[in-house]
Image (cartoon, rainbow, N blue to C red; front, side, top):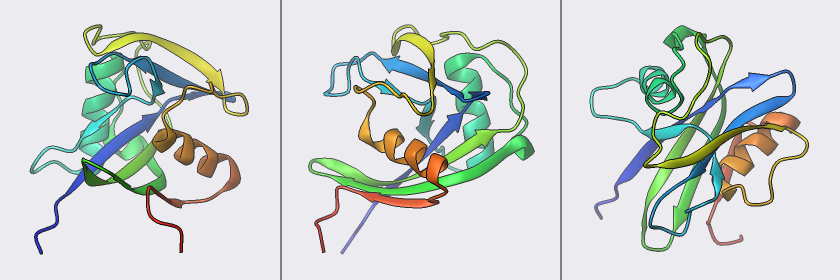
Length: 146
């Protein structure tokens, strides 16, 4: 059996009790839904380096990879999509003011309280943000119930 997993890296930029989310723009079922700054890990790239790259590419902030703390891991499966493992990193500090650097992929950025996230948040980052709030470091999404 040949199984292929993507590794996604996600960045949590937090100000007090608020997290930065982006409203996705695209032609798939996630269009107009909220998500964290994120992307696929590139070949030969460490997870922290990839997360730092994505933070700069998507929202224009610079994060030193050692300033990224792994806070959640999610193993996600979905019909007609490659399986994926998502690594969620909290940026302990960053430089620059977040702004939308990819208007072709993102409608807008907004800060949301961790305890009042938007209803139209993609389930994948929602699980990680819930995990962050309750101290759960791992989640599985899309797997059949035991």
